[in-house]
Each structure stands twice: as structure tokens, then as C-alpha cells.
Length: 313
Image (cartoon, rainbow, N blue to C red; front, side, top):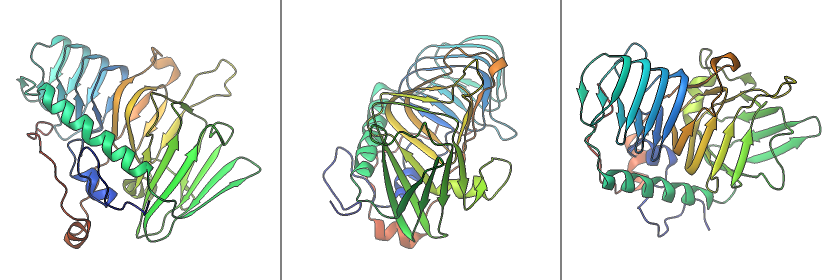
């Protein structure tokens, strides 16, 4: 099919990836989960939404600005802090500070189901895009993506060319480019992979990497299981820093060590039971900016039954 041409899907999707992401309910969240969250010894820079149950230990939500934690199901929270509102109907809290108020979740089953349908449709829609841009692989273990102005689409088939043997992933990002990277496969593990944007190693504290990551989307349309980072006694297996936003609407993600410099949409998220001794995986959410008004007009109207804004303090 033509690149992001209009098609029939469960939820009408905007043509432009930035618009589709920014106007969806997960926009602005470090993580937006339809299912459960089970996490310890880490933090989230932005708001968290959990459509299922949550178990948190030694966890902080937010930095300086107040942001919310929303959990629809049961919440067990031991030692931590929420800088904004904590929204849950009957939280079990042990030494947890709340910067603003304890409030009901205000989330219905229909809210979660509608959001899930939106992002599953968006993921399938992106996965159907025709390739745009240049992809190359080197014998010494590196991927290289070179973009052109506009919407770029790359598809990596893990069964044909697994990412695990590679140790460097270069993205040469045009100043007017948006990138969708489709990674196919139902059970995936990513680790020991250094991402570079325009030749510079991505780090949340050292732009330009963090800023440019706003225009990069990793789409996992098939994944039911996704492991980010790993631990090995030999020390040969380590973390991963993903520069961009992750869409894995069917996947339960185990995030062991590393960081996500962007926003996450997934079914579930856990730390795999690893302790702080092995490092941690940080959720460093960076909001996606709205495109200019002209881009919105060109992309057409996104039909979305907006949920009440509950994630900001």
C-alpha cells in the first residue's frame, strides 16, 4: 500500500505520526499501560497510567514538576513519592509521599478498551507503510538508517536479521524527517546496542540526542514479549538506551536496565525481579510536540473520543 495512505481500521488514524501520537490519550506520559505494572528501584520523569494493577517499590513519579500516577486496578506501593496526584480507588500505601492529593482513578473499562483499540490500530497502520529511507548493515556489527525529509519507514525483521549481534545503531536524521522503525517478531530481546543520532551517542543529559528523539518511533506490531536490557554473569550482556518513543500495544515488556528517552505505550511492564544492584531502567518521557497547524490540516482530522485529562497535576 502507499505510504500511510488512508485505510479502514478500527480507529481512524491521522496520516502524520507526530499528530497521531500527540493527539492520542498516552501523549505526555512516560508510560501508558493497558495492563499491569510491577516495578522497583527506579523512577519515571513523567506521568504514569496503568489500566490494570500496579505494584511499586522504592519508586518515584515525577521530578520537579508535579505529575500524576493513575492506576485503575489495585495498587500496592511501598516506599516512594508521587509529585502530583495519586489516583486510585483504594491504594495500599506504605511510606509513600504524595505531593498533591489522593483521588479516585476516574477510569472506566471503556476508557482502557478504547485506548487499547486506538494504539493497536495505530501500530498495525504504521507496520503497513512502504519503506522510505536507506538501511544498511556493516560486517563489523552496525546498523545505519539514513533519512530523507518527510515520513521515513524502516522495517527490521528479527527472524531474518536479529539485532542482538549488532552493537551500534546509527540514525542519520534529516532536520525535516520523522522516523518509524518497525521491528517485527513476537518475542524480542534488545540489549548491548548503542544508538547514535547524527553521529553522537544518545544520552538524556546531552543534546542533541534527547531532543531529536522526539521524532523517532519504535513500533513493535507483533511483539507479545519484549525484553529491554539483560544481565549475564560474564558481563557480556548489558543495558540499552532507546532514543525515541516505543509503541508495543500487545507486549508485556521486561525492562531490566537502561533507559527510554521517550514515551512508552504497551500492554504491561515489569522489571523482571532484578534488584538495584544490577542497575535500573529509567522512564525518561519526552513529550512529542504538536506539528504546525498546516501539517494538521494536511494530515486530516483525527477522530478520537478524548478521555478526561487526569495525568497532569
